[in-house]
Image 1 (cartoon, chains in turn blue, red):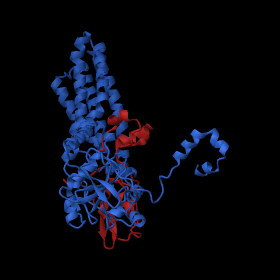
Image 2: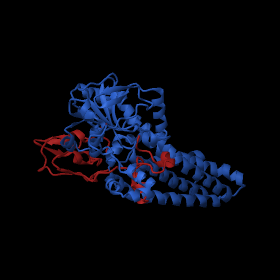
Image 3: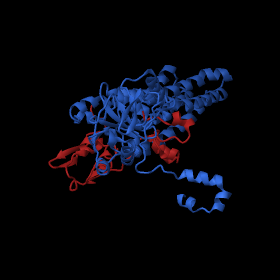
Image 4: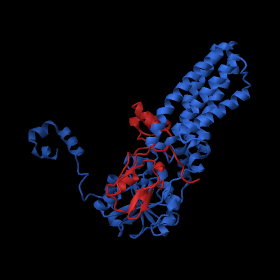
Length: 389
Length: 108
């Protein structure tokens, strides 16, 4: 394009002046090697000031989160705006770092960034934020956006080499699936040190001279970590729950032996309640009690929870299993509830920190067909039981 | 409660100990303590604990470790079966922002 522009004859220029202007913009000078560094914006809500460095004016951040930051975390946990919760990639100053201060690398998901700076209370450090499209370190490493290439580029474009004297980078250990430390060293001269899994161990790691204990290296999945995932799990089920509930109410109203309203009160509401309990089993009880429920496969855990819930509900409703209609209804709930909770429990594999893809595929090969069959069969039996009464 | 364990004998992790230089980086990056040093080279000590994240093979300078890495996420497997969302897990980049919050749970 540049060439074309130079070779244009005056006639061409005269004929297409506007088009010429536009094309010359597109292929501009953005990749020049000695271009100015790309700095994160100084007017982001969490930036508390700026710091003049040899690379330019860098945003300063605090290790203390504001109410605005905390509210953002809550909203993201509940799923609101989770995908746009980002910070600008690039270099940030935490406290008053000098040329010797450690460099910590993180993702540009705001929650990852906040966890990191919060863990470094009272420290001076540089924070290098990679462009992971607003996704946390672990997931971004899995898909390679928290990766070798982005890290190498970001080291060059952030001006990092001008700001520090040393050549050590601290990466979260959970970023390791995306980053080849030896290649980073080869291309940039920076040696990668993998820090602890949890940000809370960072100060100990720094104080120990970049040495992690064995405990710091192991990913666990404690109750607290499982519990914070529950709201989102429930949120995902909300829409299907409402739709299926409406269908159950209408079916019970039409097919039952009494009047429409009486049927809904007698059978429909119970069905909706049973469905809600099945969802609670898979999306709440399974995460909370995960290590204590028997079974390795998550769907087996969900199945067990579902069976217990189904038996409990059958007992509470006082279903008379002497009658064929009662037997059919009991059977229907013994099929539907475990199917739903097993399916939801199986979906929790994505949240867990220890399930392998090979394992999940193996589990799904047997579990998914069974869950679908049980669900559909259960619904058919339930409809039959409505007609029988 | 230590390491939680998932299904047995499925992980695709494999290691060529003859290539291993004994740098020990795999021990550092593994989040489930799968590797142990065995004299001057590393070895796989607990394959069933492997979650196939791929950190070890990515960081092995000697290319001694192989694993079919991926995210152990049922939603992602279902998505790829249905050809939806590019087979991404919930944490996939959202192409249409309106459906973002419903798209799944894992990536907190």
